Amino acid sequence: MFKIKKQINTLYITHLLSELSITGAWVAILAARGFSLVQIGFAETIFHITSLIFEIPSGLLADVYGRKKMLVISNLMTALGAFVMAMTSGFIGVCISISFHALGYNFASGSRDALAYDSFKKVKKESRYERYVSNQSIIYRVANGISTLCAGVALFIGYRPAYLISAVTSVVAMIITMTLKEVKIEENGKSEGQQEETVHKNIFLQMIIQVAAYFRDSILFLFRNSKATKLMFANSLIGAIDTLLLFFLQSNLRDAGLSDKLLGLALFTMEIGGIIGAKLILKTKNVKYAYVFTICTLGVLAGVLLEHTSMVVIMTLGGFISAMADDALEIRTGAKLQDMFPSQQRATLVSISSFTFSVIMIVLSPLAGYFFSVW
Image (tube, rainbow, N blue to C red; front, side, top):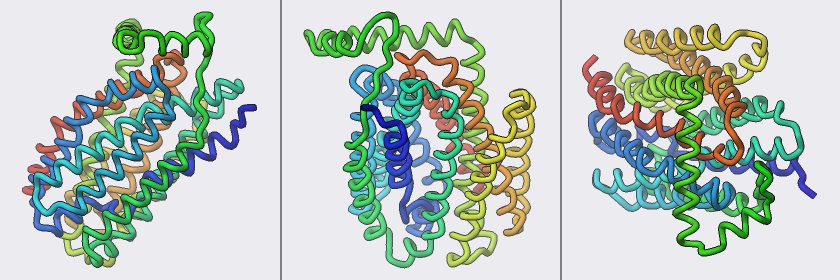
């Protein structure tokens, strides 16, 4: 018997462990190791180039071979990324580590949301999905908040032991992920057993055919649903601006005079903004999406302007407002998109959304590294 409560709680736990790390303030750690903001911006670009290449294939594999399997691979990639970072001292090693972390993000991005939505759909409780996303956003912010609170600890004990601890945490998350139940929703008259038989018959040829078919159907869906495509792009652009702002605040707050001891507290304060945004959006179910989008966009842009005051308290407030606005928009847009997506292409389409985010980040990351270092 399928137990939805156990399934969702396991997703919550694995997400928490995946995000919980004493190396969360990785920009500050790299800066403390002597890497410039331009190098850090380039490393972020490497992350998104890797995502650009593997995001859609990871979603396709999740739809064809199972979301649970891809989540297990995600944890493995993250563990490898942390281990490589602990063992390397040069910038090339940093880029390799960042690539593994990108793969970890790729294999989880579409799989987790698709598995959650179809788990709710299996028991006919899709209306609970937006609350689930809100809770996941809160978990993300709390875990990142704890991680950034530990920024001083990571700087104190050194990056090597800090990243080894992160690797162990990822392995624990991988073991728990293995207890999840795979979910397949019957559509178009095809049962689970028929789908499984199709996958295992002439497996190599069938793999190519199925992956191509899933990709074709997903692209056709986006061409036929311009509204979904526009939502993906707009949400990714605002998310990219907020992400870069919070990344570079890790270094710029220190440059503005904030001590390492208080850096974690300032970053945690920003994460609280995201938690508040995740809760507030649930109170606005009757507010038109256009209004939500406009208000949240203005919030993120206000955060960028406040960051450039060079006043620690005002900069922190800017990060708080931006995180609050971005999380609120992300949750509302994510739920809106999931309602549009067909189950069989769900992970693929979520991955395409992340792919859009990566394209934007590749363009903006090096520019932002230069921008934040000179302004």
